[in-house]
Image (cartoon, rainbow, N blue to C red; front, side):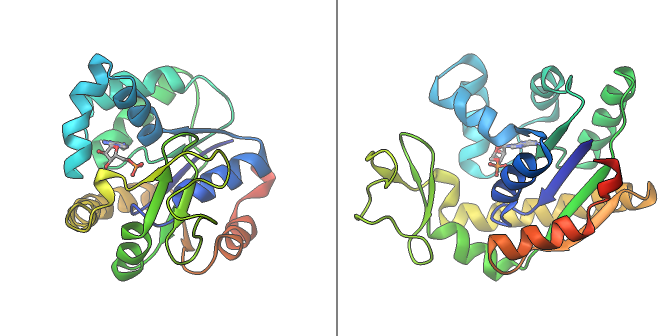
Length: 213
Ligand code: AMP
């Protein structure tokens, strides 16, 4: 089973990708996480992608492609945050074809821009273990300290309001072509991304073509 999970930054796709991955036994591949790890380790790749990430822009396709190919060898995976534009979708199709594989479903988590701004601008992330919090909906027990590992929380550079707005524009600009591409292939599955994570996951489970899992 090969699944793509697509949605605006803040649509909850990271959370849902973990839940889907665990429930259906799919390996989760998040390009955002891979890039953040490279930035943290200050590798050559990390240095190249940091500026794009901080500005809320997409990393250029050639860099993306160089990284992602190595992760596509599994039979069962869920892609979180890739592909994000038509070029990447076509490149993915080619790569999978060469490996004798094909995609099963492209899930689109639908959500409006106000909800996204509210969710992301109040998100805080642990510097140690990467756990996510929300200042109002899921605050840590002690201000600015992770409940799980005791390390300090921080706001991602790309969760600042101006950058969120930029990421939303980038998202709207690229997404329609991508949705059309997968709709024509009969692989598009739209899911309402509003409400809490369990409600959204329930909707996904009800709609997923489970016979293929
Ligand atoms: P995410 O955690 O998925 O929101 O990704 C964080 C940042 O990583 C994005 O704002 C981009 O700068 C970069 N990134 C992640 N996935 C991609 C992708 N498929 N193509 C280009 N850039 C990406």
